[in-house]
Image (cartoon, rainbow, N blue to C red; front, side, top):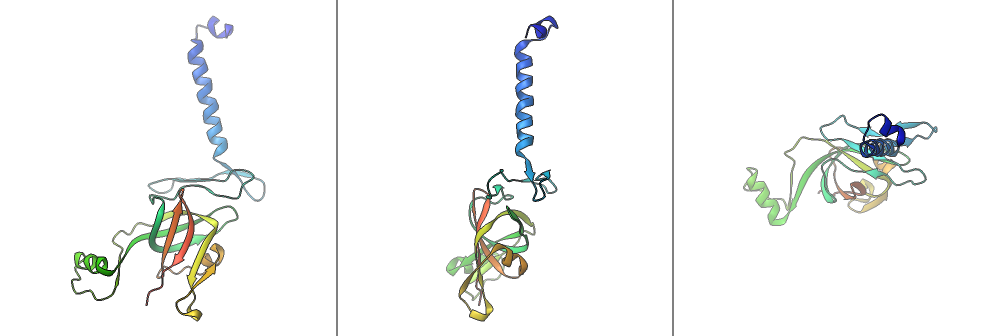
Length: 187
């Protein structure tokens, strides 16, 4: 610090600048992901209006990150695509609303269909597709046409190979990550 004083610099200011540089370096290191081939790449996607960062901490297989603009909980919508991976998967998801019973009739009436007869109603008025972070080991259940209406256990990879944007699904998000996918049976 004596060299700092001789040059007329404030030692506290120099300490603060050094700390900021150390923290910035640590943030960059945390945002780096080691690929399967051993190379390291940044894992930040800022292509949309909101950014999504997926970070994999060395030695773990759990994805760390958040899904765009969807809070933790259970949500209905339509998968447009799912891209599986070893440590994390991503999905393009069209968020919608699913109503049942009297709420279905009320929502349909609000949307201009006052004599709606079904006991469910789906409202999908926002065309925005959101990017979700999916745990590659998430619980997945699908409706198997060969078994009519019974849910059948599946995997994220198998689900990704058969995504159909017409089939509505429920997602459960915890800590910004999809931990469960359930295909909705509709008669």
